[in-house]
Image (cartoon, rainbow, N blue to C red):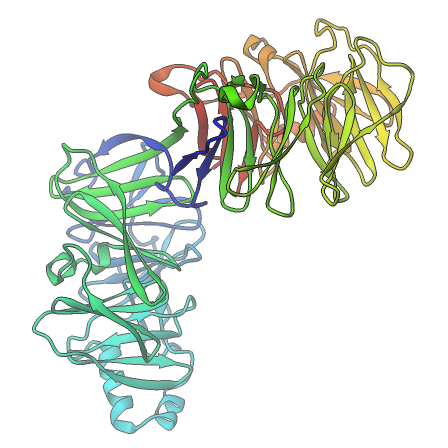
Length: 627
């Protein structure tokens, strides 16, 4: 997973983005819940989640509980006034849009949960042979019965009708489509595939033991020790069952699996497996192993949005596992000080990590190199990696292709791309020219003259043709057309001494967010006015390195003493509405109750990849989901 090349300072973290356990070490907290306080029995048969975020728990005798995910449980029955009042449900399923359906054991009636979490009897009079199925959809042909008879052999249409009515003991239908109008019906030695009024009959391999379930959009059929894959009515794959899989692993557990559009999660003993199909073959991947003191599983639910795994077992009740966060700690480089990470680079499917402050190359390769700076990937796939001592160009395998002398007297803190041009900072502003594989020094026309040493430090991309930079102790707006640098903030001295740690232009608000020696503020470039974020008495925020906005617009503030969350609505009220108060929420990130010490102050110290957030820290890379 982690590759350390001969250069000795750049680590590559390969990440299968979006996969729960493909990287690092996961920390889960667990909590046991019992349900026999609310219903007579304690065994859990099914767990589902509706579109309002409530979990619905079906007991072994068919009683239904609604749970808010914390400590609130409610026994659910029909709303007052309904003629039928079932107390025992047979199946509870949520479709992929979060609509919840129920069926009643004794009558065969179907129910739906409305937007107010009320259970109502469904009107199925206009539906053609309605059925609730294990995969998570309410199944009903869209076409009329007369159309089905017209489009198919009468004997086949009659078999289809009996199978849908379950008059001959046919198993529940397995849905192929999201809307429930295309599906499989598994018979003893064949299956029926229905789509758009047409019925196809497909012979199955004969076996004493057989079983079928959906894996993504494919029908997965077990016959003895072999499995067969079908895409609609066409067989696309066949092989021996992998590992210790057997018919006994699956029998009678189809309603306890968890299905997604691309995979099926199932369980054997104490391990949850993810089943998927790649290149017409079944792929089985271990997904999660329960606590050693928990008995073997009997039911699972995977809440991918909230990073929760809910399991039940023969002891009764259920256990909630919540993923707190990930740490990735690679082996430090030879001679490196610690696991401290300073910069991150996100490419298509990898995260590159800049470790430690100084990393020593071999004696033949020269002096120590300051790798405080972030790397940058070029369109060619090569990497530009600047430092105060040396600028290196790597190929995609992290082999050195070319090197140049660094600025020497200026720490490189930023690398940005603007209109296809690549700039980085040091003593001056520099541009890398990919076509010539050369470095060009840009001589800025600065007005007024910068205070301090005049070193160009932190860069931020602005509107088209504009870069923002901290030069010395001041903030400037740089026009790339003529390299003029206009001062927009001179000597911000209020308790910060003008030290700019981070600078980010936000197009939504048209302002620059920056950290001045640990205190967050923003500047309107048009007015040159600065406004500090209120601390609200929280001195931890005096060491804030930067503000990272995720894909939902919410904000994450890494500090020396933990991580804080600020909602999009709070930020909007502060910047646009003039609010003087901000609600900072401490994020529970840290090992064994210890507050995590985050690090750096560069724009690449934190990156968002979908819902996942990667932050550099003194302990490695902290990875968690924004939701």
